[in-house]
Image (cartoon, rainbow, N blue to C red; front, side):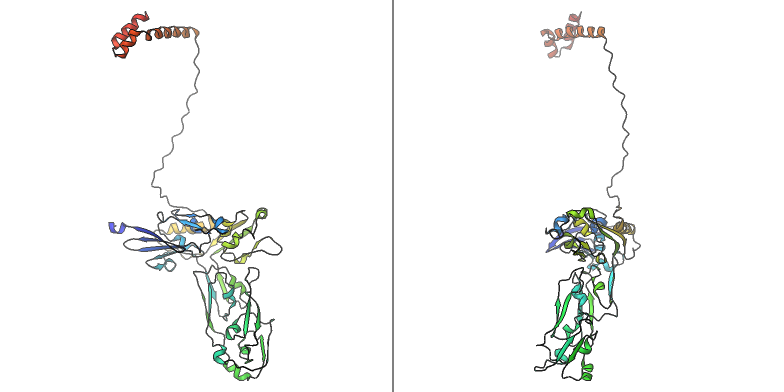
Length: 435
């Protein structure tokens, strides 16, 4: 490999809520885009990162209002492998290689999930209004009343909506301004986004177009119109429905709320979520609200008969609520991760280890220490210290010698010779005085 190919430039930038990290080489340009406002702190990126380049932030504080990144990315340690982007369930981390999203490249395996609308779809407004992430967009293509039969003043008649038949699909409200859908705040235990359908009679001229238009035959109109002609000019409900994969979390709200069984959701994970009763004593769902704030599926509720609960059908098992709970009252276990095939590449084994960690929560990482392992030398057992025998006779002789030496060393002549380093004279004086 040439020196030019080995030259790697890594840069970082911040734009609004996005942390942008770029790696440039002679052959490629990789861009890692982390949107911390989108991140819910599930920590899967921390788990799969082979370089330990991602660390969790203060998620409990963030879940209750602190404006800070739920994870911290050290771009100086990042290898730009793309694992964090491939397995982020809310797509807060994205990576491109030469301006192409890695989710479109076969060499990068990623979570495999989808939302499909089948032929039973009208379409209607229910799924669009109920989606907690605003990921569904319905574009109607049928002609509206003002085009087909412009409003005529002075017309009289009667209009009745049978609410037993009406599904609150909202198509009539798109067709004619006389119909008004009354919205309500969507809740996990109350899926339907609308409370009622009312008619503004000041805007109705009883043309009758809505009668054959309604898919449930829930509208009856009495007025001055020809039924055969109305049948001919009344439009059919047509349009397209689009899912924004960058926003969609595969929560399953659309599937649960659809009255026509038109939505089919495949989630990225299968698993279990439970509330730990003995720890719920310290839970304050109204004051804390942490699990509510981090859940991308809006699956948490406060029912009438419980302090707090979760609608398990909407849980995607990302685990963010578990990490946000300050009383540790939530347990999340992933049993299965769905992913695209792992390509036969040099780094395939490490991708498989990352995928395995999504359910085992234990990440095997390559040894990047570049150090040799040296076995420690066994500690030697030192012999016990034996106290010497105290011989009184020997001690007496030693003391006598010490007394003689003390007097000799105190002699001026000996010390003078010693200080002048005249060792021969000093030793001679010592021998003479020791006799």
